[in-house]
Length: 539
Ligand SMILES: Cc1ncc(C[n+]2csc(CCOP(=O)(O)OP(=O)(O)O)c2C)c(N)n1
Ligand SMILES: [Mg+2]
Image 1 (cartoon, rainbow, N blue to C red):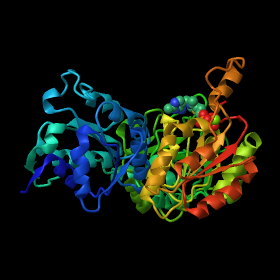
Image 2: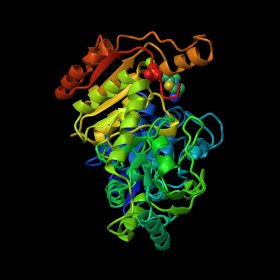
Image 3: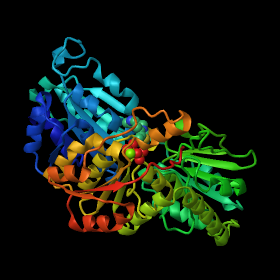
Image 4: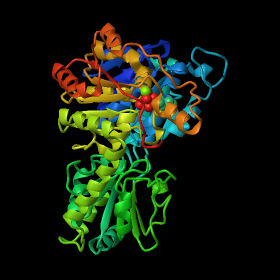
């Protein structure tokens, strides 16, 4: 076995796990690691201007490629800056590896004030990672990397964190024999249960499929589409499940989000509901409920989520692709479904009209964006008005081409996530949608986009307000406006100052032309779109 420094062991271990790019920001406790990257063939380092961007980039890279995204930062302020992004990765079940430097072994957890010290730093990350660990011996490093990678990719995919004290980076140790570490085994679906599910579904008159983000994470879109077709069962997805079946498929009814969507015209008729890769989370604004006589089959890889909110007729703990693949084998060629294509089309029409009536301008902008993007181009919808309606109306034609931030609702994630998506998908065009509030979170990383030639288009909707919040004040607080108005810079000018393109529209109708030009140019472009403050799907 070869003798290496801890730092080389870390980077070589990452390379042997297939890692090709690391997003980070340098500092005293991690300089050896940067130097190891410099000497590692085929490994790219991308520096950002604030650690949150690095972690969002790792998130965007991971969610669009299906690989683990890696971010490497200093401890204390550096690693704490990543928390919003790591929480977003947790909420969206995305495999991200956060590597943090650490104070020296002698200073660990003493609270004595070593540079960047946070005593018991791993505790900060426990609630937002699947596994986190501070390495204590140099020889643990290869094991810790393998363990972190397998934890984040196995079962319910989620972020993981490892910390490496600075003295261990220079210490020398042995690369070990590379044996896979212990990781909790993932349940294979029970064949008897799959048989029961097949029986229930094949005999259902009005089967309905509910698809969540788990279908996308487990790359089960082919299987889901085939099951829907075999059963002649219409499909409703969550925003995270968009792309589970192609957005132009005749069986797709639409998305359920914040109380909007096809549920009211679909669920009352359903006799068997197959829910896959979803928590089936219900709120007063977005209620999901089932009658006693309806049979709910719930497939989820996380045992805690199966039947968490609803009585389940049949709960199956399994990865979506495994379960749907077996279900397909067990289903007969013909089902007893009585769904007629006109009925399905009627529900699609009602759901569409419901949205057109409330948000015509937002839907027209979403339509323009869909028409200008190719099927496999990537759209990152931020936490802003037009993207909310995008969740409900943007047809996602390919899986992993539309990433929301799920229940974390992370303001500011869209633009940096788009940068990471572009790094992972250099041949696709990537567009982010932000409000004027959200875009400012990582505006500084326009510099990263330009420096690293990560060419994305950032559409910024400018209503000079934290729009959703000011609307809340008008509706619930007698228009007492405080803390929600924004005085903005000229975004187009700012973009040009960074060396990017900047385009300032005078009306929303100009979006089509501006977007087409920007996509053709292959240069990072900020398109500023003026908008009024408008109705959200929430209030
Ligand atoms: C990190 C974070 N902070 C605060 C919020 C609360 N929040 C949700 S929407 C919103 C306003 C967003 O404003 P903007 O980006 O301009 O979008 P708009 O609503 O105006 O379209 C705020 C502050 C959040 N979701 N996430
Ligand atoms: Mg705004």
